[in-house]
Length: 346
Image 1 (cartoon, rainbow, N blue to C red):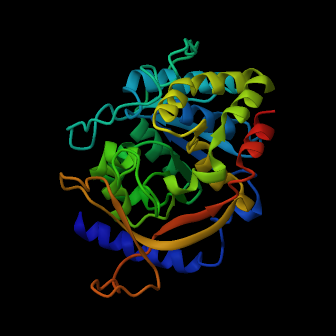
Image 2: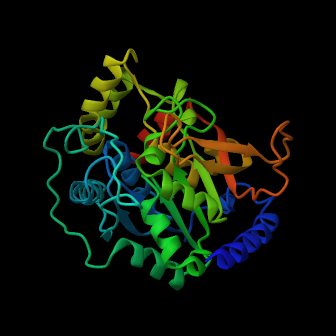
């Protein structure tokens, strides 16, 4: 396994060098024909992101892979199917991890309600999940389209880590992983330093970071300030159409949570930002290449991800040998975020 990982890291260095001037993973060439897998622990924010991606007519969504996170696997699967149906699409949904990588669940409660969708009786899917396991679907898709498949990971990294551990050679052919995870360069939400998706399965996130695969990380720090949605914006969203009403209602519980924590009517809506970073090259205003390290030891810093910036010399750390395979998004079009989402669902 160690030898395989070393080979993997070496090959990734070559790929990173070759792609150093391609910007947002060659997205500037347009979305036409791009092959996407959405990996999700479907809560309200994931649902909004799934709908956003499903509304892009140029990409090919190969399928959705689901895992435990915001809610348990069964509820997450129902929410994913419901989101696809609300978007007016027919996409296959595959069940994946129902627990963490090591089988020891971390307590990270959902702020989206018991059903992850605001507890307003929104979830009545007519479809069912496929028989194939999510991990096998990911690997089979990459084998079928080597170098073409991009994974937009909206939840914990458990499915991805299991795929890496099961078949690291095949995973070398993934084009890019877009991860909604970590606190970026700001504070966390599961703890002062850890973000929910990482905290839910830090071991899995560590496996993904250490794999050497090309990863773009969109952290919590991209979701605040002008990117946060206000009560006025939610009111506008609800009146737009049935999709807008669905998304607004699904955010009811988290809006209550934010208000109780003094947010004054603003809510961070992160997952669609990750989708926009993946699909809209002009949405991303800044990135930096990093080496990412995830803390997996129990304690106050569990789930924190440290980013070592490429080209920066640290006084007490020798980072010359690190693999800078992680592209961290440092700036997006926060001011235009809501209007972009509104336009997409129309």
